[in-house]
Length: 497
Image (cartoon, rainbow, N blue to C red):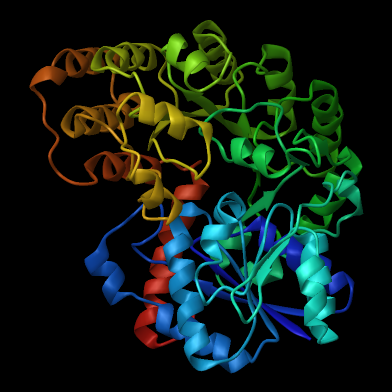
C-alpha cells in the first residue's frame, strides 16, 4: 500500500506528521512537490508562472509512482491548484483522491461537488487517514462511509458526512515529522528547521484559521492549546541537529510565548542542549522583558509579532483581539531591548479602517523602528467570522462569498478588499520602507503620503525583500532566493521536480 502526498509551494509540517504517522504503521509514503514558481502567496506573476510551470511534471510523476491513494493538501489560496491537480490525475490514472487542509474542512460539501475529489478529511488527519488507508488496503469501501473526520461520496454522488473524532490530546504520542519528504526536494528546506510545540490557540481572532477550526470541532472537542512536553521537543531537535545540521530553528506555533512556565523550562534546556538561533511567533500580550531576556540567552534570533492593527476599536470589535496598543508597543520595545529582531504582522484593508488609522500606525512604527513590517492584505478563510463583518461594512457583496468558498482569492500579500486601492497600496510600501530609513526621512514620507502614488506593481514587496536580502541574519529571505534559483535551474534542465 503506497500513499503519495501532493503539496505546493512550501514545506508543510502537517504532511510531514501524516507521513511519519503512516510509516509508524508500516505504510510507504512519498511526496510529489509543486514549487509553484511565481504563483505562490508572495509572488503572483502569471507570465513567469506560465513559463516555469511544473504542473505537467507533477502529474507525470504521480502517474509514474502508481500510488494506491493520493493525498492532496491545500490552504485556501492553493485550492484551485489542488482541483487542477486532482482533475488531471483522474484523466490518466484511476486512483482514489483525498483532500485535506483548512479549505476542505471549512466547506466540505462544496469541495465534494468536484468529481475529481473522492474524499475529504476535516480537522486533524493522522488517525482518520490511517483508517482510510487500512480500509482501502482491505478493499472495504463501504466502511469509508463511516470513518470519523471523513466525508466521501459513492458512485451515485451521494455524500456521507461523518463528524470529527476527539482531538489528539497527547502530542508526545506522535512520531517526529518526516522531514526527508521535503528535504529531498530542496536543500533550502533543511537549512531552516521547522518545528511546532503545540496545536490550537487560546484566542479566537475573527480572521484566523483557528476561528474556522473551532467551528469544525464545535460539540466534539474544545479547540484549545495542546502542548508537547519540553523533553519531547528537545529530543526532536537533537535528532534534527545530528541528521541535518540546520542553521536555525523556526517554531511555527500560533503563539509560542503563551505558556511562561513551559518557556522557562524550554529556554534552559534549549540553551544547554541545542543552542541554535531560533525564531517564533509571539503574541503582544505575553511578551515581557524577563522572558524575552531569558529566551535571548537561549538563542532567540527574533519574534514575529502579530499586531494586525493599531486602532483599538477595530482590534477589539472587529478582530476580537484584546491586547492594548500600550501592550503591543511594550512588546516591541522589550524584544528590541533584548537584542532580538522583531517582525511585525499588520493587516491592511480591515473593516472600518481609514487612511487616518494607517497614518497613526505609521507614526508609531516610525518611532519604534521594528526590524520589518509584514503588511498583509485582508484575506478571508471560508466560514470565518470576519466575512460577516465585511458584509456589514460593504467591503464585499453577498455573492462574493461563493468566490471565497471556491478559492478564487489571491495570496495574502496580494489580496485585501479595500475601497481605495491606491491609498492602501501606498501605505503597504510605506510600512515596508519605514524600518530601513531614518526617523527624519520617515516623518517626511508620512507627511507627504497625500501626494504620493507608488504605482509600480509589487514595489512594496520588492523594496522590503531587497533590504532583507542584504541583512546577514535574514536566512529566510536568502533561502527563499536560493529556492527560486534552484527550481528555475531544475526546470531549465528538465528535472521532474
